[in-house]
Length: 126
Image 1 (cartoon, rainbow, N blue to C red):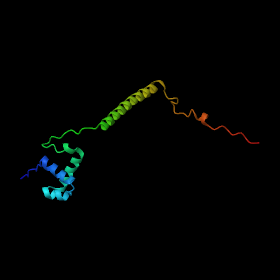
Image 2: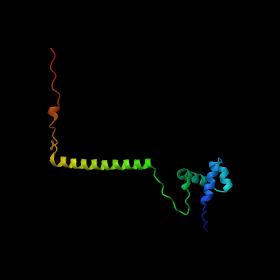
Image 3: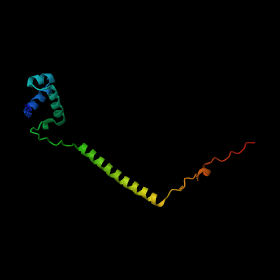
């Protein structure tokens, strides 16, 4: 036998939040309205995040509006992504160009450059 899930009205949830805002403890509010303190804390988090638009009811969640600063930050990140994509394309083309037109100087693996890198002998002091 399944137990039906209890659905609380928006008005009850708002009444609980106003009681908390008025200074009552979460334990007092939970006893007064006969609800779980954990559920009350969940509602409080939603109330703080969305304010008066919280608790739309019947599964109709409102899309959270983005502020102007968040939209500005999103636009800046999108610009950075575009710039990085262009840089990646440029680097891929450059790498391909060097692979095709500038083969490595040492193909056989011999140490060609060791003569150049050897230290010259020091002049003897008199």
